[in-house]
Every structure is written in C-alpha cells, then in structure tokens.
Length: 525
Image (tube, rainbow, N blue to C red; front, side, top):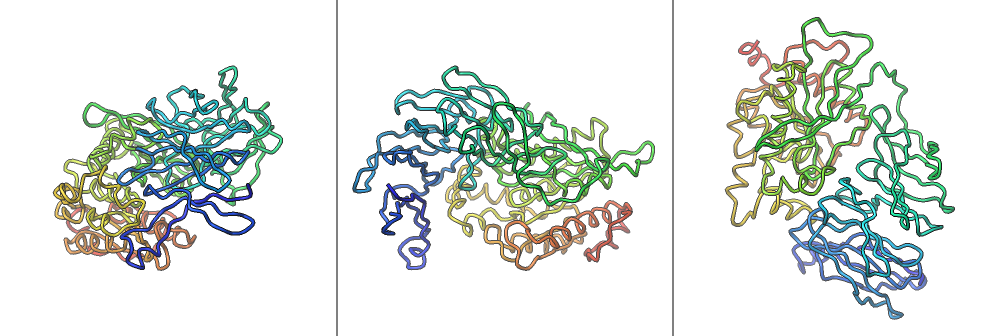
C-alpha cells in the first residue's frame, strides 16, 4: 500500500461557524492518486499513527477532552482492508498509552504506565503483552509534540530494542528477557531513538552537565560513540561550567520534591570569606514537564556570576513515575508553590545560600508559579522574573488553543462549578499579596499566554510602588527564539536582581528602566 497516514486538524470548521473548536481526524492519503480517505473521527485528538511493514495493520493513539495524553489515552489497533477502511481489533485505555509501532513480524510495541511508570511493552501476535522494561524508570516523555519516540526496534532482528529509560540508554534482548545499559558517556538521552539500516547503530540526542544536547551515533554492540551534529556553541573553559547535582528535599504533607542544584563557579573569582551566594530558583513550564541535567548556557550565565541555581522538578513533573506526575492534579498553584518555597528554604537551612538574596523565575506555567511564590507568606524570596507567565486562569481557559483548552479541569477544577478555585489561584486576582520586585518578559505574538497576562500584572506591581519592568519583544511568541532577545532578557533579568538586591555586577550593563527603584531603595537599603 503506497499511502501516508497522518493527523489532520481542521480550523476551517471554526471559521465557517460549524464548530467551536478545530476538528481532528485520522486520514489516509493515497500516494499515487492523492485521494484522501477518512479513517477515524470519533475522538477529540489523534496522535502517533503507525502502519505495520506489510500494510495490513494500523495503530494510533486517541483521547477525549478533558484528558491529556499523559493521563488517559486509548490505543487502537485496526486492520486495513483493500477499500482503505479500518476495522478496530484491539483497544487499550484507562491509562497513558503512547508511541505505538510494529516490528517486521507485525508484533506491536507501545508504552503505557499501568505499573506506575511508563514502561515499554510488546504484544506478540496481538495477544500476549510482555513488559520489556519492568523497572521504576520512565520510557518516554509527555506528548507535547508529535514525533518523539523513546525506543526503536532493530530492523534486522526482532530480538533487540534500544530504549531511553529515565535518561539512560538501555538495550533489551527480548527472547532472553535481559537488559543492559549502553554507556555513552552522556548523562541524558532524549527526543527519540532511531536505528541505522543495518541494525548495528542507533542515533539519539544526548547531553550532560558539561555538554549541550547533540545528535550522536552509538554502536550497539560496543557502545562506541561518534558525534553526528556539532553544537554551535562557543568553547568555554571548564572552570566556568557548573555541573548539577540531583537533590531531594522535604516539602509539605510529609512529602519530597526534587531538583538539580548548580553551585556558583568561576575560575577567576572567589567569594569573600564568610559569604554565601544568592539563589535563583527556576520553575519549568508545562506544568507537566521535566527539567534535565544538560548544559544550559543560560544557567551558566548566572552561576559564573556568583549565583546558585536550583532547577526545580516540583510535584507534577515527569520523570519520577505516574504517582508523582499526578500529584499536581487539582493542586496546581498549591503544591508547585510549596515545592519552590521548600527548595529555597532547604538550601537556606543547609547554609548553602544567602537567605536575603533568594530569587525565582519561570516561563509560562513556571511564570504562574513564580508569581504565586512571590505572594507566599513567610517565603524567602526577595525578587522574581516572570517570562510570559500565566496570571489569569479564567482568561487562559477562555483564550488558548484546543490542546490545552480543558487542561485546567484536572489541574484546578471545572471553571463552571469551581470558579472560586480559579479566582483563589490566579495571580491577577490576588495581586494585593504581591510585595516583591518583579520583572516581566513577554512576546507580542504569544497566542498561548497572551500579552495581557504580563502587562496587567506589571501595571498592578508598578502602581503598588514596587520596582518593576515590562519588556515586550516584538515578533516573539511563546518562548523567545531571536538571539538578541534571549541575550537581552538574560542581561536585563540579572541587572534587575542586582539593583533590587543591591550588589554590583562586574561585567554586565543594561539600559533597563526600573520603575520605582530609587524610592524603593530609600526605604529598603
């Protein structure tokens, strides 16, 4: 069968007034005639279609509002007949199913989390299911984008699979039920695994605390590694590179949270005797996501200038199993805030950082948490930076794209029956509690978190007499991609912190105008 199967998202139905949101379907395109055939339309979302090598079977993932693919999806396996119609023969649901594919013999592989971890499974003859990675390790990542696959089946033998399991590259020999680590010298592997045609090598994206993500080639039998793509980064002396350590710290409800701690490092300077460094707590977006211990030069910008940095994996993050991932359900704006505060307090208590110079920043969902952190009573934070942060949950629900349009129902509650929760957790509705200097960064073309989220919060902070600034980058959307804007936001954020925390920067200057700075300094310094 010369055909392509793909997901369609039709926005014309909205423009024509036939639907209130885009319509998603699964479609087969005849490669010879260009004729399209509708295969499936009875779900709100479709993803990851995979055709068996002989063209007789099709597997895909689908789900309905208000689910997200990391909570509850349905795996469908169907036979394709000569008329290009599908007859579903297998379904799996009530768990997070992901990444289906077939081997040469039409055996099905896919990932699900019924054990409490995303494990890789094989269904032999579409009947018997075998867990190939029965460990407390995550095979895969939350499906924010199409195309990521955390495993690959050897194209020359159906007895070997290479998978990424909790950052580690793992070789699974199916018949013997054995697994071995494939050491590459890198700490993190991510974003997909692909075999070479002859089945002797795999290609994967890898990185670690001293190296940014790059594509590598790994010989499966020996572990020999060769670089495929060189990262376009400046050569930096290792004396300026801070390597992260994974930490676990106590938090609310007798629980624990995690993060990666980067300590200050600069071979040319030493802190004055008896002093401790300022701290920047970084909150990742999502909120269903994870931070990885790979080289981020944006982090090193701070650590090489004397900051410690805690890269937080709060409750609700991926990478620590289903239970940890689901802890944020109904508690977004509570547990993530608790964990940011607990992480900072832990480092203060351990005498690692200066309690008077603790800052926080984050983007998108991380910006939401940042703003709430700055409103928390008895929190140690002195200043913060919000990057296109959510400030109004009701506005987010009513003005965002289809994929996330009902995300909040699980994270917070129903906007129709529990609006009081949206009000209680929206920074814009509780801005009277915000008493810390805050800087806001926003893209003018952001369609996910529209600019009013940042601008309205900035106006409130400014009118309260707090040091504040609002930087709108023209042409940028949800996340900045222009090098000059990335550099400018780094410089302005660090400069802002230096001014409100009253320390001198040796090599960073900025034209940033900070509202209310002088009057605030008179009262606080």
